[in-house]
Length: 206
Image 1 (cartoon, rainbow, N blue to C red):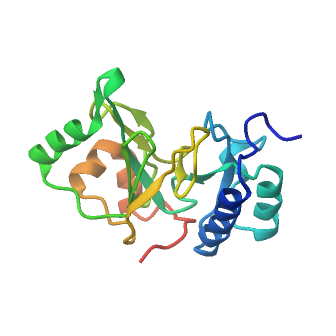
Image 2: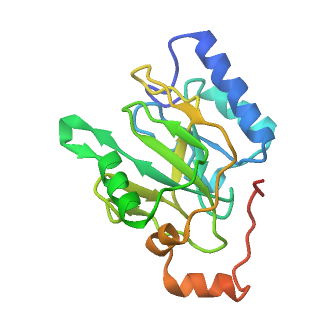
């Protein structure tokens, strides 16, 4: 049964998303469908069901043609994300918090980046070979970290208000600088990575 609100308003837009799912999967990225209003997974096991199997992906998007594209972070896709929120109505300005961090530690490198419907950003970095902790406003107000066990919505997904996620930087994800890794990775986990005890199952970038 189709989830309420997960079906769409127009066949052209649905066809664009279906085409995008195939292109993302062709990159070797595993994906799953998410509700266009709540961003919640539309499959029972959530991101754990993510796949690059085209037959299953096509079946999902036939069932939920307006579903947004969910992409798990962590070792499975070789990525983690900084979710830089911007919501003036709630007094949230993650961009200012990020600028403060960069002023203290140094600029982040150019990396694959998408604009969110509210005007925030997802900055994607290569998974560092060990667990990246998920957090909400821990490293800076309005900056969330999406790592192992987390996910982001992937462009060109369109939410229930008709607003899209859009790419503003399409280069391959960069390696995160050391100062950022110190903020998002448990020191014990970093030591495991250095000693070769942490193995990556991920899609290889670059």
